[in-house]
Image (cartoon, rainbow over all chains, first blue to last red; front, side, top):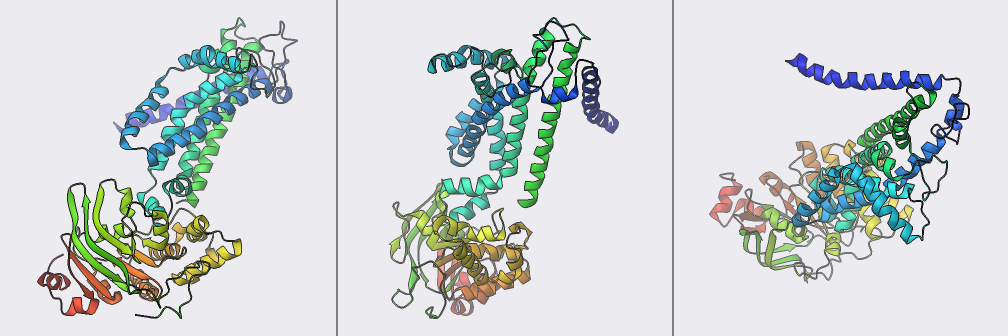
Length: 291
Length: 273
C-alpha cells in the first residue's frame, strides 16, 4: 500500500524531470543550429521567427519577447499586488463578518473565470475603453489591456494567500499593539503586515510566476508583433504568446523556426524556476528573523 | 504611600503623575456591570484602586477579574459582544464614556499579557515601537529612552549586547520583561498585568515579581493572578472576586490573615478555586 503512495509521489518528480529533459533536448536542436548563436539569442533585440520568409533572414533575439512579457507582467502586478494586499488587509482586519461573507465568494468567482473569457474581455471592453479614453492612443492589441486582464486574474490569488498569512498572525500581537495605543490601522500596517511578511512575499512571487506564464489572455489581447520597446500602449508579443502563435503557424515540425519555441520555452522555464527559488530563499530568510 | 518625588521619571514624557497633589485613589470603579452577550460577567462592582500600590485581583477562573482588567484600558472594545454599564474613572476622568480617546487612554494605561507577546521585530524595535508612534524623538533620545525602559524592566544587562537581535530569541522570562519595558516606554502611570507569570518558570516568576514590587514606586499596578503566594508576596492590596462579584477587598495582609468573608477565607486557604 505504502509503495502505491510512494509511487504517486515519485510520479510527480518523474513527470517534472521528463518535462525538463524534453525542454533541454528539443531546445538543443534550436541552439545548436547553424542559424542561431546563443550570444545573439541572449542579446538580440529582433525576433522574426514568424515573419521572415527564409531561415537566412530570421533573427532570433529574445529581448522583444522578454520586453513583451515584462510589460504585461509589470502592469498586471501594478494592479494585482496593491489591490490584492489592501483587500486582504481589509478582509482580515476590518471587514464585518457579513461583508466578508459576501466579498470572499465574489473574489473566488473571479478565480473561476476561464482565462479565455478574460482575454475577450480585454479585447472587447478594456482595449476599446483605453482607446476611447486616450483618443486612440493605444493599439487595438496592446500590453496594457492584456496586463489589466492578467492583473484581474491574479488578484484573487494574491488576496486569498495574503489573507491566509495575515489571518495566521496570532491575536496576542494585535492585542499587544492595541494595548500600546495603536489605532486599528496602525496595528494592521505596523504589526500584522510585517509579521505576515514572508507569507505575503511568497503570495506576490506566486502571482508573479502566474502572470509570466499566463498564455490565453496575452495570446488574445496583447498582439502578435514582437517589438523591443517599453511602451505599454504598443502591441507586445510575450514569450507565451509567441509559443502559441508558432504552434498555430504553418512552420513545419523540425524547422529551426519551429524549434525556436523550445528556446523560448526554456527561457521561460528558467525565469519561473528562478522566481520559485527566490521565493523559497525569501521565505527562509524572513522565517529566521520572524521566528 | 511611597513618595515618588525621589524616583527619576521617564525621560521625554513631560507629564508625570505628581504624587503631592494627586488623590490617593487612582482608579475609581462604581456600580460597574459587564456582559458578554447576555451573560453577565460582573455584577454591580465598586472598588477603589490606590495610587502607587500593587493591587492583586484574585479569584477562581471565570470570576470576572480579567474582564474588569480589560475594561480599565477599554481592551474589550475589540470584543464585539462585550458591554458594560456603570462608572470607571481614572484620575477623575470617565473611561467608559463613548467620547474617551482610547488611543490616549492606552498610552496612559500600559498592559502586560498572560503570554509574552513581543512583536516579531528586534529587541530595540520592540521597545521603540510605541514611542516612535506617539512621541517625536530624535535618534539619540530614542536610544536613551529604550535603554531607560530596558533598565527599568531589569532586562538591560541581559540584552544590551544584542539589541538588534530578534526578540523571539529571548527566554520566556526575558520576553515578558521586554514586554514590560515596551509598556513603560510610553510613560503610562497605570500598568495592568493579566497573569503576567502564568507562562513562566519559577525563577523568571521571581524576577518578575521583584520587578513588579519595584515598579510600584512609580506606577500604579493592577495584577490578575491565580497564584495565592504571588498575591501575598508582591501586592499591597487584594481584591477577591467570586462569580462576577467583588467579595472582599483591602490590604493584602488583612485579606490573607483575617478575611471578613467565609468564601474569601476558604479561597485563600485553598479550599476551592
